[in-house]
Amino acid sequence: MRKHEKDSLIIGRFQPFHNGHMEVIRIISKASENLTIGIGSAQYSHSVNNPFTAGERYRMISNSLKEEGITNAYIVPIEDLNRSSVWVSHVVSMSPPFSVVYSNNSLTRRLFIEAGYKIEDSPLYNRSEYSGTEVRRRMLSGEDWRSLVPKAVTAVIDDINGIDRIKGLKDDI
Ligand code: ATP
Ligand code: MG
Image (cartoon, rainbow, N blue to C red; front, side, top):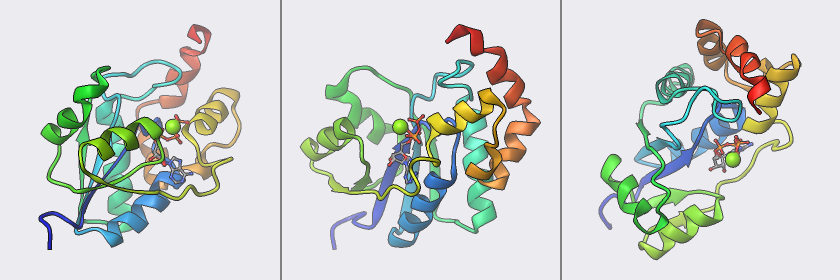
């Protein structure tokens, strides 16, 4: 068996972490020995499209995993480099070892394929509702966003007054 053959990676911005992310992580964590969840664009926060800090997103994910009883996942914040040719080594330098990458993003897939990693498709669940863009849209418009995210995420967002924050940033779009 190749080293770390059953260790995998999934990357998202998780702005915020939602039920679609939770569903796919539930499945991948079962198929993996260890799973690394990379919080991408970690340096961004306090904008309408990237409202939450890496630490806040870390808490959302960590508490959701706890709620689900998932114990084989590592969470690693990863800043953007804006330099694709060295991005994979940047991610590798920040993560526990992995050899499988779950992604639907064509650039992410391309870069990891070229670096010799195994790429798995990651299925999308109820994508019309379970998307970060849709959750943020509902937060701004005052529609129901709570049903689209794990309970632990609503608790973190309430704790940091996240809705006030995103609404206060609305004029900056
Ligand atoms: P945004 O609309 O802000 O881009 P997003 O919902 O696309 O948010 P990202 O933070 O961009 O989520 O994370 C992307 C990762 O999450 C990808 O690997 C993608 O496959 C996975 N993902 C996103 N939505 C779903 C979903 N509904 N079901 C399963 N996986 C999902
Ligand atoms: Mg996306």
